[in-house]
Image (cartoon, rainbow, N blue to C red; front, side, top):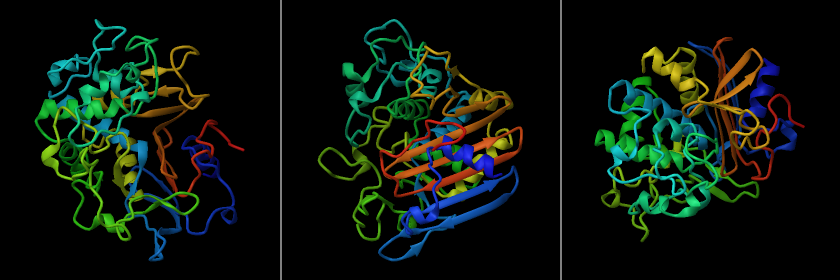
Length: 370
């Protein structure tokens, strides 16, 4: 088990150091699980420092890019219901053009977006205020990798997922936050939400506050700074969903990284992966979710110095010979986290660490890290 945790810690971007080398109040959570049980857990640190509230497995935390995995699951639910098609031109859902300016005749699909092969890049940004229009962002040339046609090259880009969220909304006439609750979290009985929209009243006050290494607040101090917006606010600072444009924005709930979920909730999501979908989707759809839609061949993508070697539909794959881990890392606002499962072995692990410096290693080694 120790070797497994070292592998997964490295893949999730965690550098394992002695506890004495870390600030005592940084949160450190490690939870292993099987398909039907939580096996072992270790929780240390303070969820909120001024109040000295200790972290627990049930405290929600902004889990960063692990959010993308849950979006992939919701998309496959909608595929099974006939609301979405992975290979349809997404412009047909949205009612406005989505085209790479250097390759205007090539359609862009959900399969490309979910597997980071759409041609989009993050240089134009991906956080939009409530009243913004995603089409305006995509009209900027810097939003696109001009050297590669959609479908031909992997480039990890957060902006893919606000566009996925807008497509989900346009296809279902439902807001993204509600789609995620109804299609994923309620069926799995996971109390979770995106950017706090849809979580129970007061849930944010029990969040794990994210701190910078120097102690500054990064996100989610709902006790010390209670007047916060549960979404990305409008351009004039107002926090009112009447400004939101379903099917036109997609960013206000941060589908790329805004999921608030506990370590226990992540383990339940991992058990769904171990159980082949837990009835959430057809077996064929689950197989498509986790299948490598892209695998690095030396030239067909930006592997980020070995960090990315294979990717499914919102699911990262770490392929170590016969052993394959599926899941996703999360890295933002001082947090390093990972949800990983080995389906063949029936094992899974959740790891969460806070207070990590932004320039600390982010998992560019897959077996052991210095």
